[in-house]
Length: 195
Ligand SMILES: [Zn+2]
Image (cartoon, rainbow, N blue to C red; front, side, top):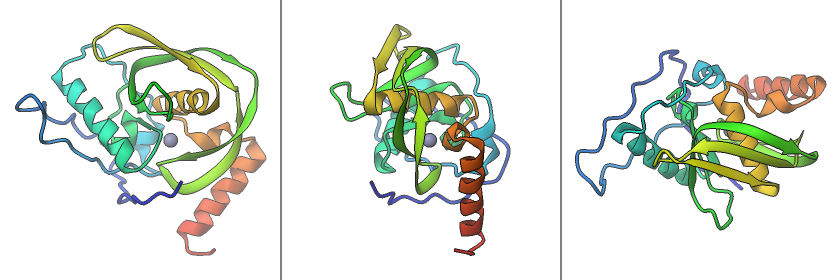
């Protein structure tokens, strides 16, 4: 999968305010947000739980789904667009379609599998990363109802990847130390134009 969207590098440490709620129903003002890139401090922040699912949260989720498809990606965490709240969206290309998880918690994992993983915040790069094969997540949906997502394959992987983001972690943290150092060096060399 090729990344056709490259966002501008942002370095300001202050989180941006939540977008304004829609002025009318059937929004015509859906927004595509620039995706924050590795090095942006907001990606390292522990996100804050959502206590009130209001119009602002609903609008944010719509915009996150739009942004995820535009990128294109299979998942997006709110802090990847500069909003440090515990919200992620995903579409694992299955019958579930686009889904939101608010205040998700990883409640069960099982097995182990190597899987080629990429991240919209590290565009165009992929690594073979070993994680549990199966994941079960409990979260709340936009109606405030408790929901559970569970599976292996791409779904199991995207659930774990997005929850990592919401805790300020990202995919290279899941690599063994030596491989992580090598990957970071490659990224640094690339940024400096040495490769
Ligand atoms: Zn990611």
